Length: 561
Image (tube, rainbow, N blue to C red):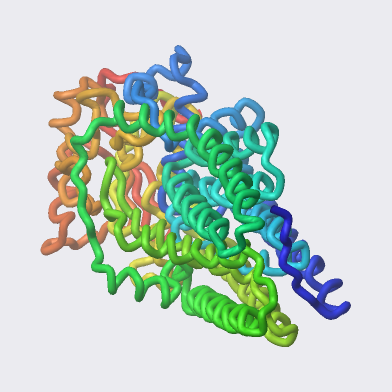
């Protein structure tokens, strides 16, 4: 069914588009190379899971292997961790995280450009709208598997469009491989891809019934081949998903969460792009409004073509159903299900992606395309600039203090972090929506066999490694319930942990815990919970304190080298 829509640009715009796109791509790559991996909420904990997978069973890391174990239950949330573990055979953990972030941040715009060119070769410029998609809220939360599943979603649509153009065994196998890859990253992108494919197939089937008896038989045969090829390509990933679902069980609670109106409002206000300060949200909102304008103008143009009696391709009609299907899915998905949450936040991103794909197939005036290109390029530059500013100016002072503590902890020592808050400072001066310090202490775990006894990720059943039974520090040390939403440390019970696990706590790291917290959650922490521990390091500004267990103890903790 080869029917590429035509999009006309002036010669200057055609030459400018690749310069803008690859310029922004190079700028984002340079940001990672120069500034290192962006500090995200859960990123360090996911690196720790991958680091354990790399060293599982290694006798040189007895403490780590005593705390963690590979998850025996298969999970569609593992590809990023396995990729990280593989990278660690050649790279240190920090550089491995940077490489994975590059796959997330660069992969989304590149995959978008690929699928847009498949829709209409002249529509590659719309890939400029995908730089905010790369640097969206869930990336800052450290959900690398989700970002990779967005790449998989786009590649799955690209593979299906190629199959639609010319059904065949080779292209069917490519689609099957892309769907399997997407599911291996995370089920979110896979489910969204299936919803998009189902919507487009429905339009293709209805279009084959158009009142033209002479062509109806041929059209139906063509659509039948496409439906069968798509179904066959979907079967392997569908079967694997059923295996995952059966193994995971149904004990996790399901919560619907925000109302439909709140969800739609979040999409219209570009909630996925509200990340840092005011500039990034404004750039995301401008890009969303520009796409809505493009699609509205394009639909009007399509209706005018139809009224003039001109032939209208099936592809634009099929693509128009994609954002509607993804919006409908966003309205019904429970926010908490299958042992995870933020499902609504994930699904709110995809209608935006669907709008960009529709815009590629619609007839829009050249001036409007030029204006939208300027908005998209400006938005891409803004979100990259904000990320670079945060990483270059706000993050280093905090990371440096944790690095000072890192140098004072010996091998085979356990570390309990207690954080007064999870922002870069108490006032959240940088106005970040994520929690940059939430798992920052995990960088201590990446060498020296030094378990960090705080990890929200490792207590969940959805990742390829987990705490061993009876070794959950969130429960034993902090008194957290399973799947607890309140992640502040309000209690610290070191004796309970040591009695239950026979693993002593060697160091306690305090970050921005107020010295006089008589009425707060850390009341009496230093005088009671840390009895028997001595202060061995305090940062220059006093925000970070490191306490070491007094006496010789019975553990394996060695002096720092």
